[in-house]
Length: 209
Ligand code: CDP
View 1: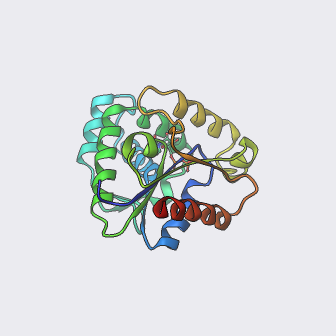
View 2: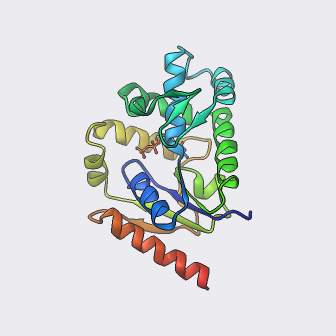
View 3: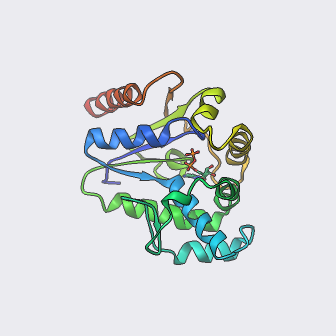
């Protein structure tokens, strides 16, 4: 792999999006929020009344969509950014993300995105360090206490966050787990700035050694 990738995984509310976005900005790299992609597919499926549990129908839908995440999340040109955190999407996204046909389509797009960037890409999600970019320049696993993660996701609620944690770590297809060679960063009580500083230090250390 010639492109530079910083891969970040972690559970809901661990700080992935904020840290990855700020890190990309600090480095002048691109940023990819892969959770937004699974959420966008879910929004589109619900609006087309596709049965989320129908593996083949969902796989076909995911294959045919035009998806963009920047500057806003769009599906076939329709802006769905403000719909991504609806309750029905929080609930449905775990079903969609457990579908291996959907995952294959998302992984393909994620790799194509990184390959098309002239500098590096910071990519965050659940399977980025383990499946999508196992050869990434730097791999980070973000954690935080359940209490703090639930506080950061206050509009979603504790039950939903816990349910997604269980679904994401126990599913068969690419479950969330820490890669053996990932650096672990606990963001409990830490600012985004502090987390970014720490990751930049790791990156410097790796690229100088
Ligand atoms: O922001 P938060 O961590 O709460 O969730 P997200 O990153 O928006 O991801 C939403 C859901 O998409 C997760 O609960 C996973 O089920 C799924 N996901 C995944 O399976 N693989 C990824 N690379 C990213 C997200």
